[in-house]
Length: 260
Image (cartoon, rainbow, N blue to C red; front, side, top):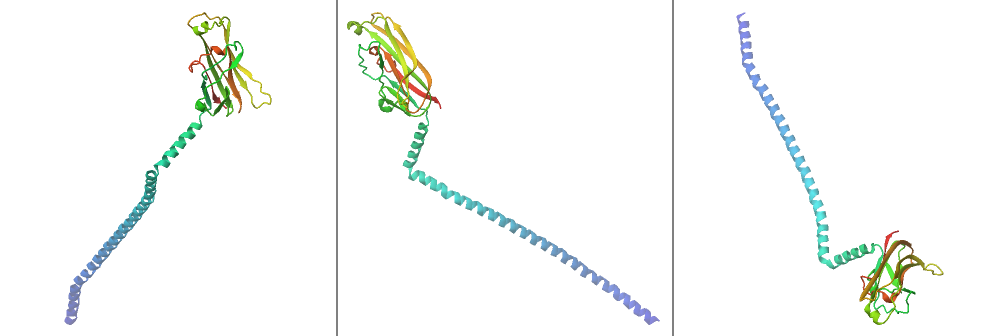
């Protein structure tokens, strides 16, 4: 009986000694689990950083490639402008010329001098000849034998001014200046017709009785709109053309296109 109690005591004593030994084994397991979790988190963080770095590196490489593609074009453009300035100037000049060509047709012509009209013309109508300055005052229009000719059809405004003057030089020539008829006509010719028949567009003037003085002047100015077709002509006739003032600012003729 005592022996059995002793064996029981030994078993209980051994169990009590072995119990603390199990605790360290459980703590080691927990520490290993924590270290493993931290290691996994560290690896995930490293992987995430590497992915971000790779993404940024690829984006920067694309930006560099785009810049590299633009730079040669910009350099080539600059080199072209530097290497060929004459071509650039010619292109600019051509653009200016084309821009001028878009202007509406127009003409402005002063009287051609010397006039040399005979006093025998008197009240007969005489066509005035104009100075075209080699076409410098003509834009998309032509001039021939006193007529302005239309190149581009459209609605035009036609105008004319004529000044008549009488100075004492005529008195010495004993010219009669009583009851002078000083008239101005603007005519329109259709050159597309088989028979050209001028049509009067405007008429203005009057009958004057000038005094025998050192200087007398009378001016007539008129204008109107008219539809003109290609090759049509307009011209000016006057009476007593021998009295015309040869000054360009006093006697002139012109037209310009208003619309189609």
